[in-house]
Length: 419
Ligand SMILES: O=P(O)(O)OC[C@H]1O[C@H](O[C@H]2O[C@H](CO)[C@@H](O)[C@H](O)[C@H]2O)[C@H](O)[C@@H](O)[C@@H]1O
Image (cartoon, rainbow, N blue to C red; front, side, top):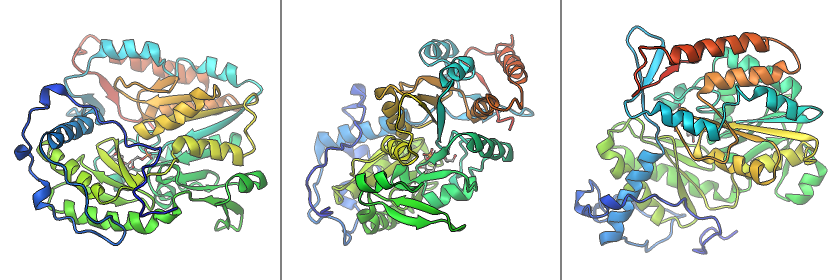
């Protein structure tokens, strides 16, 4: 693969929603412009970068800000003296219930899911942040609870289970710490899975590897050639964001995360614009939006959806009649996996979201604590502990509390994970 070529890949940057009412904002309002760009071209960058000017800049900047806002659900505030969290005032509960008609709760639909799983092999795919762990301000502190770990371990003893994360494989393993799972890091661009002869034929880049216990595994890294480029762009992004208070850049080996969760909102455009400017020098890299994070990654035709297909193939579970893949995730990057399952008419995507979102998932869950209950219940299909009825009772009680009379229509109670 020629990394320096400016050939445009079939994979395009995510479209940026543009709010028409904002198109007239002048670029001088931006805190940062191309002219004072501190970006120095690196070894793997393209020289003579495109300069963007005038109204195109305005549209892009406003589009950037809109997209950055759109990808960030309302912030939850902790109520004093309570273990519950309240979302900010814009939340429309009726709208959320309407949305749930389209994306029913996986917990409420549990019996249906179990019925569909009869005589089928479930394959479990789990995203990490926002799915197994709650979203927190500091990405280094996104720990999963011990009970979630125990449940995932138990699920993995019944169904092949893989974690598919935007984090580097090593980082997500450090959080999950379960050797009985398969892991795909960097949005699926770094997979460690079982050994399979057919797989090696279809994917010549597969490398045989062993884990620390000496077990043979397959390592698949479809964007391997991008490593030096990603590392270079990581260092540039650290450099050009160091004066933005709260900005954090993470190196995830085959991709880079630029966090703006802890950045004042009036600096979001600055951070978005700077990332955009850096990428002008790297036509083989693109950026996508996550939860208050910009993800920089190689332009390769590979994503979490492809990772699911790869893992199913490597597990010998391609027989769609006998296999029920279930993918649980909360983020935009998980949509690729939901889409693969929907398009191939096998299995279910379950979206973890406490706000309305368009999705290719079939079901929804409100937060990681509901995810905990769902995977506990899936396991309970084999071993009743905790029992279905116990879990349903707890759930009914929770919804009663949500609908309690002191409930304010502009807000909704979210329970911190009970796990
Ligand atoms: O694919 P995932 O496993 O969901 O990873 C996606 C990103 O997750 C992390 O960021 C998100 O979670 C952080 C901790 O809760 C939060 O602070 C941040 O705002 C979220 O975007 C991770 O740090 C990123 O690198 C991943 O790409």
